[in-house]
Image (cartoon, rainbow, N blue to C red; front, side, top):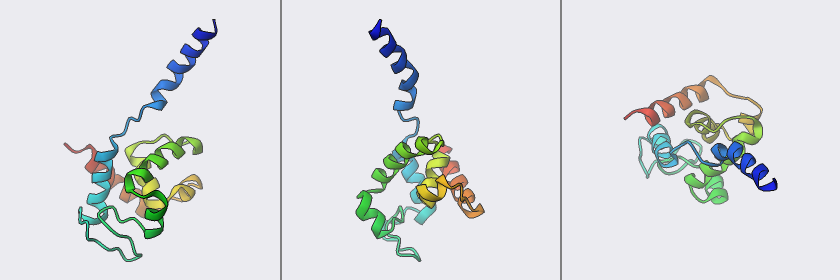
Length: 121
C-alpha cells in the first residue's frame, strides 16, 4: 500500500521534475538579444560576454547555464512556472524583482524578444 502511495506521488510530481525548457537553446536566444552573440561584448554596467553577465553574478554562479538552472529551480518557489519567457525575465531582472512582480515594460519587451528567438526554427 505504501508503495502505491509513493508511485502516485511520483506520477504527480514527475512532470515538474523534468525540465520542459531547452536551456542551451534558451541561452543562445539570450545571447542573441544581449550581445548579438558577441563573446567580447562589454555592457554599460560592466556586463561581459555574449550573455552579458555582471562580474558578481559570474563569481556567484560560475556560468550563465548555472544561473538558468538556479532560476528554473527558484521560479516555482515564487509561484511562477519556468518557461522560456519567465526564465528570460528572471535572467534579465533577477529573482528578487521577479518575485516582487516589479516588471518594467522594457523587461517584458526583452523577454518577448528572447522567446521569439527561442521558438523560431
